[in-house]
Structure formats: C-alpha cells, structure tokens
Length: 496
Image (cartoon, rainbow, N blue to C red; front, side):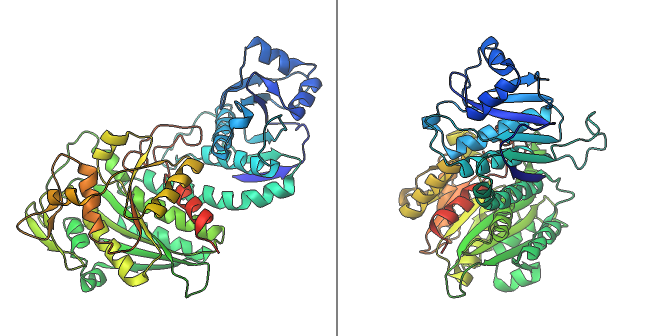
C-alpha cells in the first residue's frame, strides 16, 4: 500500500472522493469539481436526495467532463460534531467503495467546510489512516482470487493544500496501520500455521525495527517456576514459548510501560473439552498476544519516545494423555498454588506467570494485559466494548479516554474483595474458576493476585478482537483491536 499527499487538483484517473456536510453541501474544492462537470455532481446529489450523513456515500459513475472513473461523495455529517475517529471512519468508508469498484488508485480530497475546525493536515492524515485500515485483506490461502485479476487498492493519494503538515501528521499513523495489520494477520492465521514456535519466530522480525526480542523455552520457563503456564501446554505436541519484546525509546533508567498478552494459539478447552460447534474460532484465542506484538511494531516503527516491554505467553491447549486434569494443583511462578477445576479456564494460568514475571523483572510504571479471557464479557458488553478491570483509577481513566478517541472502546467493570471468596478453595491458594456468576469479574480477581501493587488494567477482548462487527475501517475476522488504543494511551501520557 502506497500513501501519497499532493496538491488539490482534479486527477485524471482512478476514483476521486470529495466530501459534503449534512444536507449535501459540497466544500470549496467539491464545488470546483462540480463546475468541471457542468453541475453533474450537484444534480446527482439532489436527485438521490443525498443527505451526507456521517459515513454515507453517493457513488457517481463516469462523471461528465472528468477523467476519473467515478466520483464518490462522502458524508461528514454535522461538521461541528466531527471527531478524528469519525474522520477515520469516513476514510474507511471511502476506501471500501474503491475496493468494491475494483480500482487501484484512490484520490481523497481534503476540502474546507464551514464549521469544520479540524486542521487540514490532521484531516488528511486521518482520512488516510481510515483508508489504510480498511484496505486490509487476508487472502493468502485463496488460490482462486476474485475475478478482478487479483487487483487490490494499491495507492491512496490524499489531495490537500497542507501536504507538508499532512505528511508529518501521517507518519505515526502509518506505523499504527502496519501494527494493526500485523495483529490482524496473526489472529487470522490458522493454528496449524501459527503455533507457539512460529509465533515466536514472527516476533523476531521486530528486531529489524530495533526491538530486542528474547524467546524463553520450556526448559528456561521451568527453571523460573512458570508451572501454571507450562501446565496449559503440557498436552500439546507444540511446546510453549514466552516472548519478551523490549523497545528502548528513552534513557535506560526510565521505567518502562508494560503490555502482556494471552497467546493461546489454539484452545480446545483441554480435558474440559469445548463443544465442537465454533471451535475453529479458537485459532483467535491469541488475540491479546497479537495486539501486544502489533503495538510493539507500531511503537518501534514510529520511534516512540518511551521504554516499552511486551510479554506474551504462547501455548496450545490440547486434550492429550499428558494434559492437565480438572482437580490438578499447580504452583505458579509467584509461589501461589492454583487448583485447576476447569482446564478451559487456561488463559488466566498463562497470564498469571506472565504478569508475575513482568512485574518482578521490569518494575514497570504500569502493566496492561489483554486477553480473550471469558465468554461472560460478551454477555455483559456484547461486541461493542471490551471490559476493563483495574486497580488504578488514573490509568483506567486514561485508557477509557484513549478508547473514545480511537474507537477501540473499553468499559470499566468492578473489582472488589467480595468477589474473592468465589475463587477461594480449601485445597490451594485459589481455584481457576469462580462459578457461573460474575465470570469476567472472578477471572480479573484471579489475575489481580499476580500484579502486586503495580498499576494495572486487565482488558477482556473476547468480544472485540475476533469475529467482531464489521465497521468502516475493518472488514476482517481479526480486528486488530487494542493496537490503536494502547498506542494512543502511550502517545498522550507516557512519551517524553
């Protein structure tokens, strides 16, 4: 995908997108293009009764007097209410129209409208960001391509009077696009291709960006006492890995920020076997680890002025004769013992050791973990919000604000000592399930026992990371949720 920024002028080929505000009012450039067509565009707007509500499009094929194959009029809604996240969505909707039209070149004009107070450079950058996110496609295993001869959207050219400012504003956005695409690729991969060792190998590619990557083997994890994580993978022929990714964007004495991801590359449920229907979706049970990997790519690619650590525990949960059994008791790296009453509640075992390792080794400013942890979070929040559980009000408030700014939304859920009794057991320090009630909360209460006093947020992304609702900026099964959220959190509050 190639992104360019050039001066406002009518292109000679491809698709041209112009914008209109609610009521179908064209901007200054749009009016100029309309004049070139002898009023064709304004007549089409009137004939179609196009109201230009946010993300709505009017597709005008073979407009009179222009060299482009079509003009797309994109609705901005009410200009005084527009946010940058809305602009992302408009860019995505425009790109979707170009993809459907099977064209390679898309030109998006950044127009001026009364009441629109977003700087032209930012407007251009976020239109390109949304278009770049929407342009993602995962088709590497399709041998029979679509009947367009394999054509894909190859160039997004943004027409603007503020090209220099737009290029500067877009530079970090392009890094984020690459990070989101990487996370989507990882989630979409089948489990026979992306197993723990292969996942670790893909993380090693980040060294090209300056990320230090360490991969711990089962022998090394055993020496560290990570028996909760290892127990999850003991039934698989694919041995676990723990990957530690480090980005040094500030002085060595500055405490890092830390991100931890659950990376179960396939989850059968183990001996507590899942129902067969829908089990194929469990290739995406590593979406938390995918997000952390994509985030580390984004931070390094844009040379973020922060020290950041990404730790992912990668396992496969299989029902082999060697697999852990319901009723087994394992000892975590922290020394705390866990009675495993359901082997399908495995992600919290992986995170228990990964969280403890991270806080013990790196002494971070904060820890945020992401995991497709519970089906219960879908019951509570559906697929629109991820659930956030935190021991720190300031950190959680900042995260919520970043979610509203990017569209990767989070909703805070409760933590309270009263829920602890639901995971107490007479046989060990805790059990790994708390029963039917408050399932997402008891999972978070479990994780909290492994963070000590480090400011921490657990994000349950079971409803948002895979098979989530299609949007203007994502039509993929794997959404890449969390990369933009956490990158924005870091950019707004933790860079020097």
